[in-house]
Image (tube, rainbow, N blue to C red; front, side, top):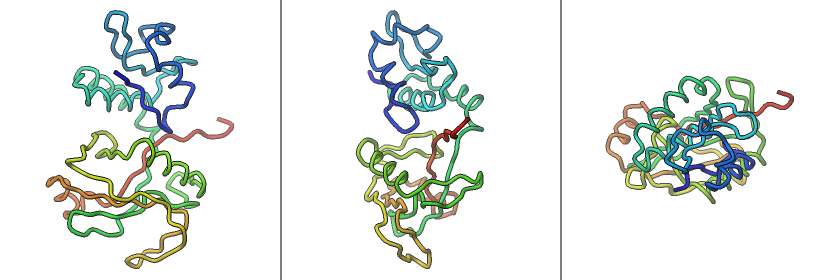
Length: 210
């Protein structure tokens, strides 16, 4: 059972360190949330430094929920809340259009500073979009709860080729746009009531020189 998700939040050196059981046996049991005999599952520590890795914890939460490891999921959530929540960056943009079950909006716009003064250029956003389209196409509610295709289905995910205006909102060239069909009745209600107002891109920032 794979439980390390290849993504922008988990560097390649970590994935390569943990992608087989033979490799995992090189690391202490304390680096894993579950040890079952010789099998070490749900790694959560950086293989080089031994520090808690927030991306691995998020992967563990998702995989544990998917495969019914309730105790692992609860432990990972508790550790994540205690060790990682303040480090997480969430970038939220309002939906541009809601029509029936469909929602459409900006995931990330280039060269726009967020509340922390950080930004990403068009090339970085494009690479993130392409990786997502190729390997993931998933959606989480509040960054924590994975949604099934029966709840929400991705219809479009692409980079705006030119500047354009949509519903009086200027969308910059290089912006990442998505359209979803939301099938879950509770999610539809929260959108109508204004409790869900946009997409939020979650990730971790590595600062140069840090």
